Image (cartoon, rainbow, N blue to C red; front, side, top):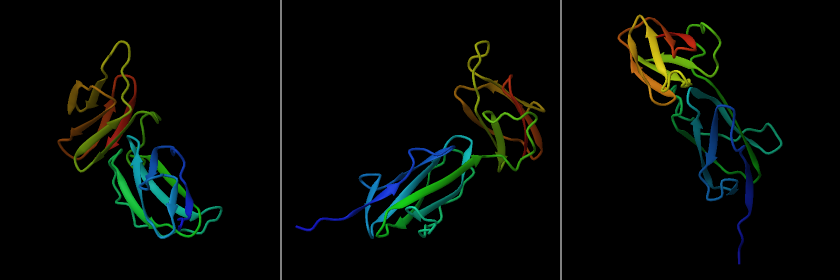
Length: 175
């Protein structure tokens, strides 16, 4: 009887800003030569900045297919690699979307807004006892309405700078 030798996939349960999960039947084990798909899921308002797979305990990288890059927070991405004859470690870095937009009016890391291709993305809305559900205002009065949930996507009428508030937090967004 021939037994397969399994190697460890050292993948943290979560990263700050997202998670990475392997396609293997046991998400922490793989056989040498097996193609492993990593599913990368950024949290809302986060994007994948980088992902690396290393031989365990080293900085020797394992070649990956490039994940499809997207600025849509929460969009699932994948990349693959061939499992070496050794254990591996996965390292991923996620960052808040909108770091390159106009600076925040106030630094509200939980409340973020960014614009891309004429769509305004707002994340981190939080209902208050006085305003439940959240009240969202985008100044120049492009939009005023009630939002159910903690995120929204609003089509913008044109290019420009928008001020976005949910009544308690404020950010500036350039489109």
